[in-house]
Length: 119
Image 1 (cartoon, one colour):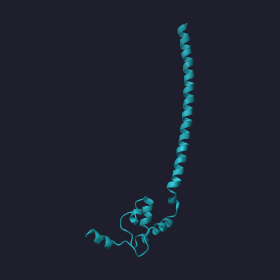
Image 2 (tube, rainbow, N blue to C red):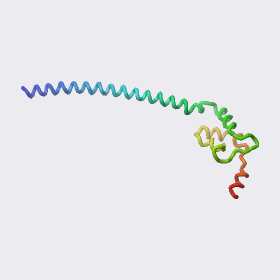
Image 3 (cartoon, rainbow, N blue to C red):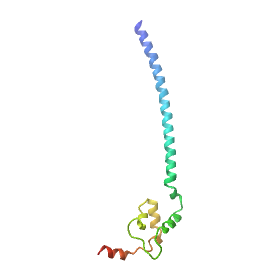
Image 4 (cartoon, rainbow, N blue to C red):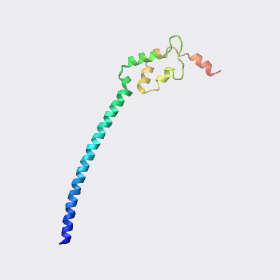
């Protein structure tokens, strides 16, 4: 009968569409995997630029920080970009290194800055 022919054709179409859906889902999964790999490679590359200084030993970073200071006995400014306090605001590791490097704080002229605040 005509109705059975239509039903049979629809079943064949549904089987064909299900196969196509499975094929597309497999392609999507492969593309998602490729996207994840590319994102990981991109992040790894960015991390190599952004954090390479953090791979240095803390002692070396501390020595670099000391080169940041003006020659002794001139004190560094207490605030601003040239102040040792600015090193504590970059990241947690730099803060810990700066605070555990006593020589970095050897010549801050507190009286000079205190007098300036009250005049």
